[in-house]
Length: 167
Image (cartoon, rainbow, N blue to C red; front, side):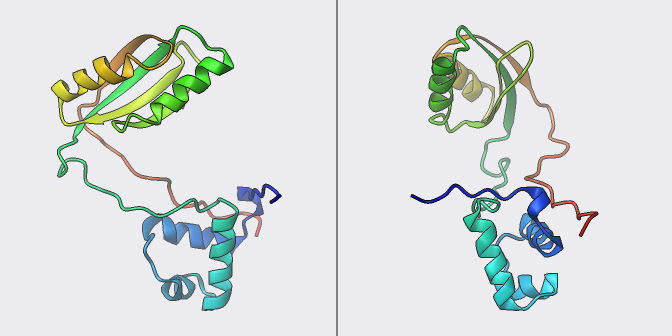
């Protein structure tokens, strides 16, 4: 049995933070170039990167696409209120959400509604179909409220890691 390993932000030293800062902007950088940028040789940089990956700090690498060029420029934020909020209902809802590709993000919220979703489609007609055929049919959905984004002012991935004040 493998022990569950977690590394917390406070466990990261200055070199780890530099690695994360560079990867947040350039995920395809070579280890050699990464080492040069952070001021270490290749071997210790590679070992640190492997540790960050093994401990789940770096969960993966992926390409970022331009949604406008792909015809998916309609963004709606959807508040979802469930009819049942017991643990089994939350689990069923969450599992079903994972199967809807148009739902980019879904967060359990403490407030007047239960979940907040970011939904991306090709337009209002596409969104109405997703709402009617997919979101409204998710387990335990009682009602929804939709807010359509008119323009994305800032839309990025996770920001680079702030430098440590203690190391």
